[in-house]
Image 1 (tube, rainbow, N blue to C red):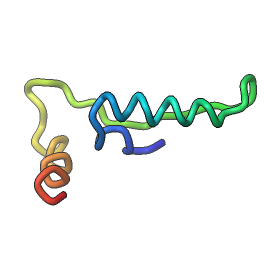
Image 2 (image 1 turned 45 degrees about the horizontal axis):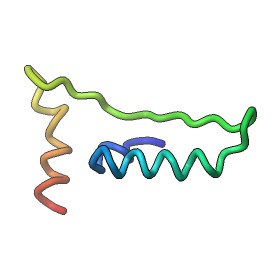
Image 3 (image 1 turned 120 degrees about the vertical axis):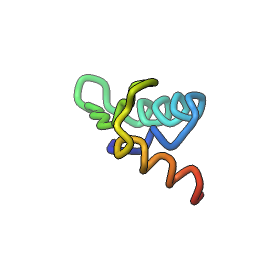
Image 4 (image 1 turned 135 degrees about the vertical axis):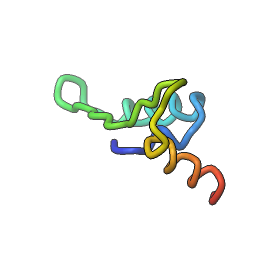
Length: 58
């Protein structure tokens, strides 16, 4: 998963991951999550620009 979970509140992220886990085969399937982690303070503006654009546009 690439840049999916950051668009959803925590409760929906849990539901998304729960549903994905149900479809995975134990001992075989692997889930890779690639997300940006932005610190709560002193963040470079380019790191947060896409989030602000997404929040205002949609």
